[in-house]
Length: 563
Length: 68
Image (cartoon, rainbow over the protein chains, first blue to last red):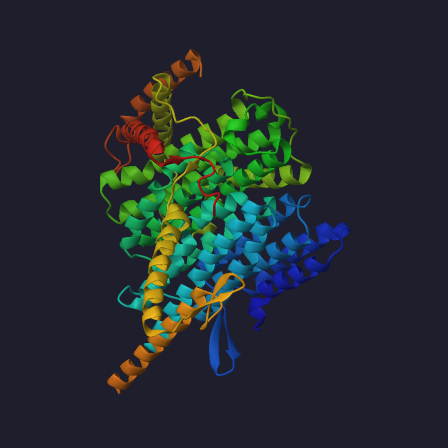
């Protein structure tokens, strides 16, 4: 393995040691590998690359540029913050999985070709699912399986795309890919699953809220961001992505505004922000891509902050259901303070780093020539952030009077430390915007911090809040929180497809039984009062054998005919 | 939310809206005065009303997927 993959190697070695550590060595096992990996990043600089000879194939193991360095730094920071946050609430399996997961994320954004990307892509899926299962509830187990299915399908789709490109003589180096071949479309689908494109997104609100404390905090930082990174590498400027991104940002609105589980609200809100990033990738110019990179950083920070705060609420109050919470502000003042910063950032309030990133991103989208209505829709997403983060999370959990008394005390010191560090980073980035210039890999000179832009954002947020207050006073507020299921695209694969499959199997078994009886493949014989078959012990195996034979014969004849 | 808060919100909106008539971006689709106040009010109104209507359509009992 080349020396340039040292950060990844350190994370994986750290994961191995964390899996074997004693509980008293928690600090050392979690923090040390991340610090060591961060130190090893110094071997990386823009332009650095390394190949890896595996059998007769030369893999472009590492290709470093400004953009990959932003993501590498971000993943290290996210790993460090998640490690501090979860010091009191993690176990060996989670610590090991988290380190391996962060290492896989770092490897994915350093990958120089699609094969290396695929290797880390699969590692991401396998390591992250442990963080979902670590919650150790039946719901988490089931959600983890569904999460794994989506992510493995994404990996298989990516591999199929790579295979198509390779067999058709395409270069496998990570770079722009055209949507003029099945290979390109397969790659877009694989990246789309990772980003949570509409209809392919349900693994996000399904698994993230059910993951462990450590899991939900770190999962929001890496998996979807690797998807965004890959999309930006391969499909920047693809106009279709502007449409997909806009739909993606609008799709979850009903859920973020009505869901009872506040961690699920945040999971859906993650889609809103990623939708904006996908639209920015579709715009494809330097301003938009700088905006995407910067917004990825800010989104990871404020989303981690809000997930951390709700994790603290979950530990203290035992629930994150809005209908059962309220009045936590007096009992958890530190946590509420951090949530306020997270809500301000989520709403792109001037003074937070998210204002700069969102204005930069929108500036790039505007530069691409979108119309005023389209621009207004994308710009207004920050106003909607006031509703879902401000009204739902801040107001319903911390401000309003609860229906029943909620017992809680403030978050533990490590939790507050991690949340405080993130809040400080968001505010520093907002108050000293030139510090964020280093996070613009494409070097655009667009200046989002202008008096007119600041004023515009205040106007947008204020008038949106005013409109909601007027609506609420007229009895048209958001529907009350409560225990219920809100149908989403998951209904397709959890209800419709299984029902169709059952119907299909019933029909198929009837057909095969009819054919089998006619040609005497199956023969009913009594067996201790049960019905047995001569070809198999149960009818599904018998019919499967029959249909396999039919298919093989058909393939044989097709082969003979083609030759 | 009590009456005082709404009064403060309205006053702040009037002041900001007034200043916004004079300080505008030099270029771009958002240079029209009133672009952001209008966007904020319209989007929130449409979204809240749409969400209220859609919720009735997609709402199901909590145990909808329990048989999985």
